[in-house]
Length: 392
Image 1: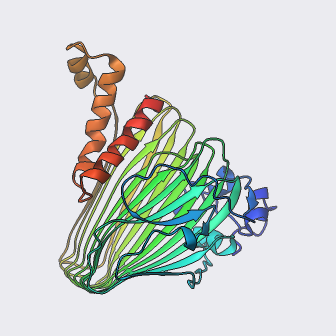
Image 2: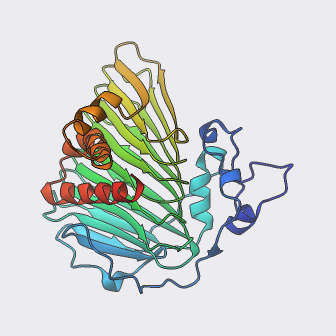
C-alpha cells in the first residue's frame, strides 16, 4: 500500500513495509501516524515465553500469545464446542483507511481461527492472552466465529512489563451467526513505551447480540479501530469503553457502525480521563443505509481533563439515508467540578482522594452497566484504581 509518493520513507515505514497516513487522511486527522510513529522496533524473529507468570484477571480458558506467536501447547483445556486452529489467513488492506490491516498483513505473527459452536454457552470466559516480552514488532490475527445459538464471554487482553518498547499489531475478524450472543472485552494494559495498533472487524447476522467493552489503561501510542457491519434484522449492539490516557500518551479509539437492514439497535458510550499532557481521540461514525428503516442508534462521548495540558478530540458523525430512524450523538469535554471537589474536601477528605473518588464515579457508570460478572467487574475496577494511583 502506498499513501505518499513524494516523501522519503521514514524509518518506521521502512521497517513495517507500509506507508503511513498523515493528518491529510481524514480518518487520521487527529492521529498523524506518520509523525507519531517515526521509528519501529525490529521484526519478530523468535517469541519469548519467559513472561508466562503474569497475573490472570479471572479464571478463564486461556489461549496464549507471546510476542505475537500462538503457543498451542500452553492452551488450557478447551470446553466442548470450542475449536482452535492455526489455519487462518491474514487479510490485506489497500487504502489509507485500512493501514492498520496492511501493517498486520505485512508483519510477523500467527493467524489463529477460533470457532464456538454447538448451541453452547461457555461456563468460563475465553481468554485471548497477549503478552509482550521482547522489544519487537509483532502482528497477530484472530478469526472468530460464533455459530447460531451459542453464547460466550471473550477477554482480549494485552500486557507488557515496563521498559519494553514493542509494537503490537492485531486484527480480529468476529462473525456472529443467527441468534449468537457475545460479550467481548478488550483490555489494554501495555507499558508506557509501547505502541498498539488494532483493528476489529465485526459482522452481525439476524437476532444477534454483541456487547463490546474497551478499557485502555496504558500504552504510549494506541489506535483501536472497531468496524461493525449490521447485516441481520433484530441485531443488538453495544460498544462501551473507558480510556485512561496517561501523561505523554496518545490514545485513539475510532469506530464505524454500518446499519444495512431494518430493525436494528446500537448504543455507544465512552468515558475518557486524560492526565498530564496526554492526548485522547474518539471518532465515532454511524451509517444508516436506505433499507435500514427503524434503526435506533445512540452515541455519547464524555471526557474529563485533569490538567490544562490535557487534550481530547471528539468527532461523532451521523450519515443517514433512511427516514424512519432514531439516531443521536453527543460529546462533552470538561474538568473536575470545583463545587463537587469542595463538597468532599469540606468533609475532611484529602484533595487527591477526593479527586480519585470523583473520577471513579465518572468512569464507574460504564463498568457497572456491563454484564461481565462480579469477578471481571472487580478486575476492571482494580485496573482503574492502579491507573489512578499512578496518574493522580
